[in-house]
Amino acid sequence: MISIDGSYGEGGGQILRYAASYAAAFNTKVEVYNIRVKRPNPGLRPQHMTLLKIMNNVFGGYIDGLYVGSTRVTMNFSKIKAIRGTYDIGTAGSISLILQALIPPLLLADSPSQFTLKGGTDVRWSPPIDYMKAIYSRLIHLYGGFIDIKIRRRGFYPRGGGIVDVYVEPAELKGWERIERNSISKVLVYNVVYKLPRHVLNRQRETIEKLIKGFIDVPLEVFDEYGRDSLDPGTSIVLAGIYDSFVSGGDSLGERGKPAEKVSEEAFIKFKSWYLSKASLDIHAGDMIIPIATLADSKVLYSVPEYTPHMDSAIYVAKLFSDKKIMIEKRQSYYVLSFR
Image (cartoon, rainbow, N blue to C red):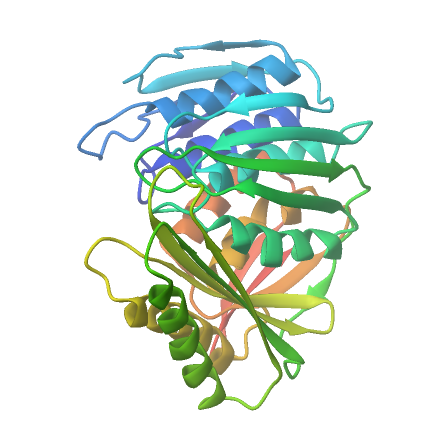
């Protein structure tokens, strides 16, 4: 059995999600203790329980300690297999975070998965669903895998209610190497506003267009999405810089009292930080693909602008499962992560 200290680093839900993902992928009994003990509301929250229940329902086996507030969980899944059906995370629980845990083992299944998740599509402390669609899914292609994400309805805080259809094609995961990005061929902008005046959409778009055009001279494609059918109002913006077969960028969420211009500015600052570093991936992409890098059949090598606490936690968990040599090297304007 592999034991994992859930209080390592930031001590958030990320360690539990990655531990569950590896437990399924490696078919290994796993214990996670000290779950979120540093947080004001320690232990499992409803969204963590939903993830574990989905994985237990799909992969079989058993989970001990599955209740709200539990600080210790033992997981022993039976077999990786494809997912079918609809799963409700509840309220505004993040669909993106559930996908981060589910996709790595599903890429190892013996048949494609096709399922629906209900919950939050654009919520705090997680990537907007457009980031998963525009950036994460493209990076999965580098490994030889394929995922398709279709957004049927947006879900914002506090009630959620978003609906996302997901297709995952299994693959023999291969390694890849890219230390520095090439010149960007275009920037995609996903500009989303729901249940707010249309001028909010326009201000987000006008601000991001002005910022990008004043910074780099590349083609810009803006996808405006304005709607009324969400349960709650909300906004988000995602920037995706495309180069070769690679992509990275930045994102931001709107919230009560935050001007539309500020939403665009925050996303641009993240994009600019990645761009100026010349790193191959932005910090969020570099974090999220660590489990896939661990499962790939050969070396994976990439760079990020910063080595973040989230990456450190992800690598702490990865080293407990993988026999790959995982190294971090600081260079002039970025960090290189290697999985050999």
